Length: 260
Image (cartoon, rainbow, N blue to C red; front, side, top):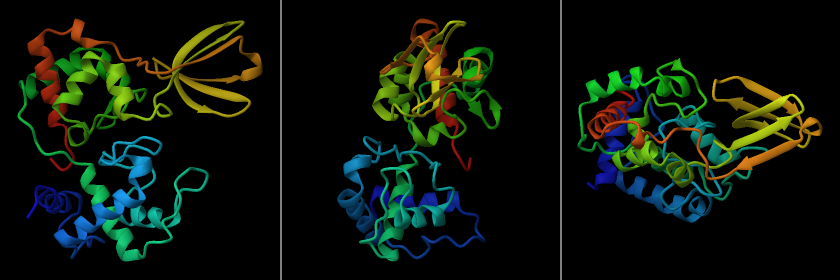
């Protein structure tokens, strides 16, 4: 059995209660390999050969925005997502879509890596730093201006987590679509706001500031509207935290995994 297949078996135990029937029940290692083949043929052009995103969204995550469960993911592959660039895979039958969905699910869980520090001490640093809970949600607590961290250990490895602390803009540009965490700066006659773009159409733009407050503006009222690409609102903690504190904090983030 390959490492990918072994991870798939473990993933099925983690994601589904023992009494629940999964649409992936009965799939073999060969089925999963066929799902990977079909993904590379039909999906990789937009989502990347490793699923990390590109023209399409990043699939290397345990929770997908448009697919709350496995059945929804299989249905999505058949129907597409109206109003987006995601088409329905009408050339694939249901069994093939199920194999692709099963493979996509394996992309959202990383193998465990050796932690560089103490995760228990890292939990204290996370809570006492002030900045982390102010911008991130963890198990329902915190503010959601930044990505949710409840299961970040499933989705992000040691190298990425360290880079996200030291060079957050570079890490964000590498793995997230700019449309999800695009910094914008707007100015009106009454003042200015910098934050993340929540929504935008031809006439209005909504911006969430660093405090989590959402502001809505009519574009006709703006004296300045700037989209700041390759920029992150997250501070560069490499100049703030001591090396051992950084290792402990990263270890805590690595420990945040679903089903554990």
